[in-house]
Amino acid sequence: MPSKARNVTGIAADDLAAGGRELSQAAAIATGQEDDPFDLWLRRCLREAFDAVVAEPIPEDVLRLIEEDRAERERIRRARAAKSRG
Image (cartoon, rainbow, N blue to C red; front, side, top):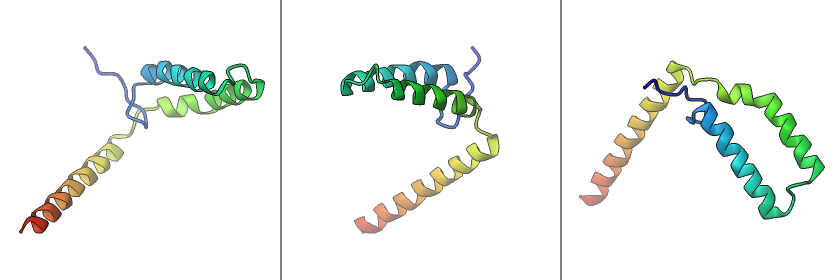
């Protein structure tokens, strides 16, 4: 089964769209503003402007940098923990 393309958030685009709609609707209902025309207009405009960008896959070199940084942070964390123990 091919893996889904990941975007800048690390979430597959179709999962993001579905989850984003559910979260937006839940937030709107919780605040009692599900029918606020301005919020509807703003949400629509933001989606039109940025959905394509959010759905773009993360470049491999950026992913590599993130993983290298994660490994370096883990190394530093372990060194600090070892230093505090003795």
